[in-house]
Image 1 (cartoon, rainbow over the protein chains, first blue to last red):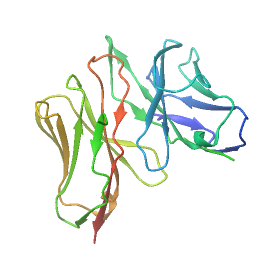
Image 2 (cartoon, rainbow over the protein chains, first blue to last red; image 1 turned 180 degrees about the vertical axis):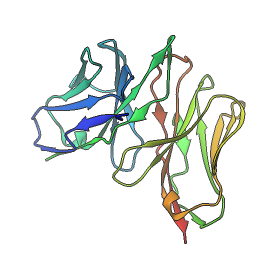
Image 3 (cartoon, rainbow over the protein chains, first blue to last red; image 1 turned 90 degrees about the horizontal axis):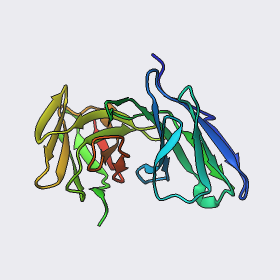
Length: 115
Length: 113
């Protein structure tokens, strides 16, 4: 049973560039959430995708956008990168049953460094 | 006031002793509560979840929830060096459906051999 996978593992970009991070949910899961974890902090919710639509969004600027594909995989895009965007980006997947979301399971994360 | 608060530690516990980790939350309507373990450089790994007041046990781990006091804790019995990690408390909001997780900053636990 494949768990949540993310790519790439590590990424180095310069300020102003754009980045795309990818996530494949755990087998059988249909909901994908993205989190940003800065060093020494807990993960911060960015947004959640279900049925190919953004269902919830945290307090992140429009530079952060996403997409969910029909196979439930997801992408996170960040435009005009800032130094402060350097963080571990985590994807979590879950299954919605009768309107109730099951437990979220995290992927290994993508470490983004902005120089 | 932070939505989810944890003592950042570090918390040092001798091997074989009980480690007690605490968390308070501000949203009285929160419905679901989770403990994740995170090793340095790795992603969070689910340890336990609890929805109802009282205790829930799973092996060496016990989660305790008191909604009236807006308090949730994690006890680790017979602590092992491999339990050394950061423990993240996370809560969901007032609706059972499709809720984001709100995390504390985590408590760093060190088990001393």
